[in-house]
Image (cartoon, rainbow, N blue to C red; front, side):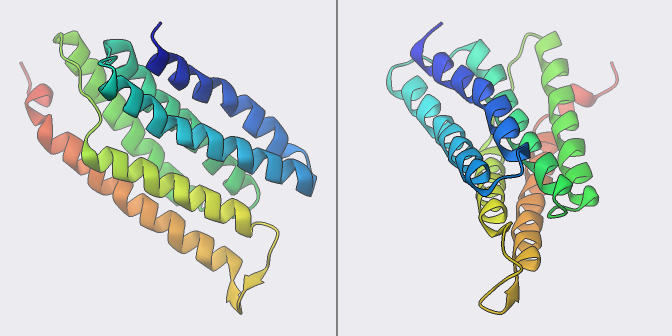
Length: 182
């Protein structure tokens, strides 16, 4: 396993640590969980940089890197939903897109092709991570500068959901030939 893939696997292993820390009803643990989430999020940029710079792009990485992102962000979204800071509808839209893209990737793999992440998919991931970080930072507060913290979180999450939909449509359009009835 090359360095880029090892960094990706670190992100996968950080997810349960993040979840356990956040589920402990303690402010210090919540901030520790947020730190773990940020570290895990940063590994997304690091593994991609290493893979490109040192020519370590692999089929394994193309599959596991987006999966690691999905596991991390889904875990965070579930926690935000648990604390009442994310709509079940927003999460359903995100999960529908993720299952659709996973299906496209499976069909492509069956044809011997690998569907790498698109720029829209990367923007989606970044906006989701920003929304999660902001929502987690705002969790202990009722308002910030007179604005509802829950409203701020909702707006940021729905912006990320918009990019989630855009990236899903982009994947569908770019890979529609895989969906043709043969």
